[in-house]
Length: 104
Image (spheres, helix red, strand yellow):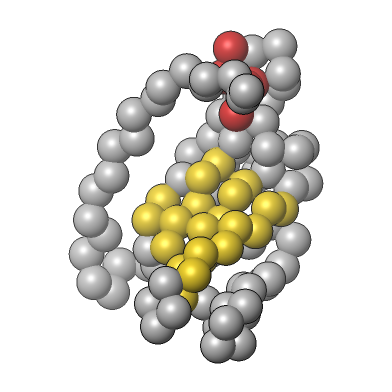
């Protein structure tokens, strides 16, 4: 059985069309890059997966940022590798999902 992680709520705000993405400098960006839609903020370079069924490039849905910078912080339970990011992709044609992980 897996451990149940503490719950955090994420507030989302729609970004007006045409507004540029906010690029926060490292390390001030850590823990502040969770988002839905738009383009992924890749840590190590573009890595969009292809659907295992139809082989088409999948659509970016969301990214979930690490919270906390060390495992000793209460939020460090959400440390994905070395202050990494989880990227969620979905194939709207096939209904398949995939996750990509990158870290520093």
